[in-house]
Picture 1: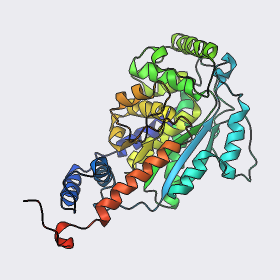
Picture 2 (picture 1 turned 90 degrees about the horizontal axis):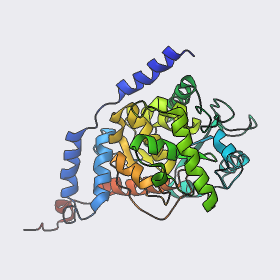
Picture 3 (picture 1 turned 45 degrees about the horizontal axis):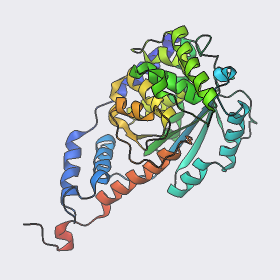
Picture 4 (picture 1 turned 180 degrees about the horizontal axis):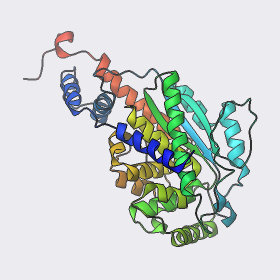
Length: 358
């Protein structure tokens, strides 16, 4: 695939992203205000319902298919001793996803969502019989402390892979809402680099303990990220440049999912720190995606609140979670669905024969 064709593909998807329907949102607000409750008394649940109406263009939307896309990839920066876990854990955890034994599997089953696992660039191979979508760009990225994670063409390929996956799944069976998940040892390191770059924040303020590293390792992690930013000099005005120099293949896949979902009027629920970094990259490519995003939770990862503030997103909850995988996103989908059930299933004052407030 040539560079020119890939650029055109990304540009075409961007062109397909339309503003959400604010007029229909006002109609939804009228319905919400007529339900048997004081106006606004269900707070953000009402806001969720109204926003889903605006995104979907449907006054009474329903969620028939909820999907969590879990993108997985490895990172060359593992060489710098910035993780509590070895690289092979990425491969092992993806096996766990497929076998249904991970946190995301349990919570997805709890809310009736599917989990789709994608190999974007894991440092290992899977049996063709395993239920994994293979979009592998390479066997992990290069070490960002020494040079770019990937070249620009590879970054574009990772975004296009995410676009293709979402479009293909939606074509098979229409998707009503998606959540973003990921797996990749060291991906908090590259996400901290991305957030520091795109929010113009000091590295120390956005770098947390990730998988539970030691105090010595956190100092090494901060040093490594600063070095990576100095060595690569990513352009904060060019999301693809940032992705190529200090990102990851799974982050590129999530960026593609965001762009494609927005182009298809599918609401997007971001999870924790890594998926928020992906949303920042997508928003740098086109700010049109922001209206399609929901923030599920505020994780304990240090830079997550800074990323969310930059995205202008208020998280739905804070349960002190930091697992990733899409675990927060799937719980967010549950709350959003509660909101649309309020819109669709509650009685109005006239239906219930209840007197209104004078």
